[in-house]
Amino acid sequence: MSFELRRMEFLAAGPTAFFAGDADRAEQSDQWISGVVKSELPNGKSLALHQLTVLLRARDLLDGEIERLKRLFDQAEQSL
Image 1: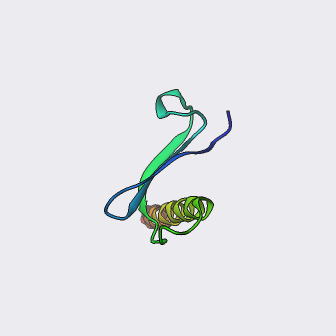
Image 2 (image 1 turned 60 degrees about the horizontal axis):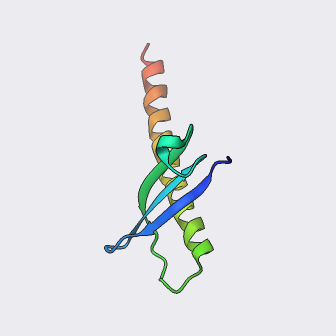
Image 3 (image 1 turned 180 degrees about the vertical axis):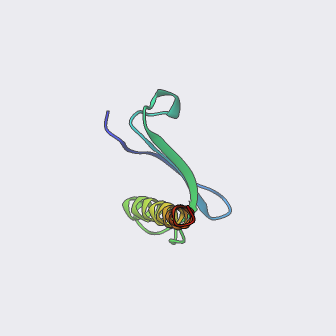
């Protein structure tokens, strides 16, 4: 199976939970990611737009953490 968004759940307080993987469940997947992010879209928008917004938000959060870790790594390498 291909890696794709498998499940998205709108939580009562506003955030959205998601699961993407190469199988329907994490236990069956070789690669998967899940999380909870703020969507901040009104409910009347299309499901596809909600899916895109959630995945882009997750990507932005991961990109920010990757950049933070790169800076820490670079600082550690320079101190050697």
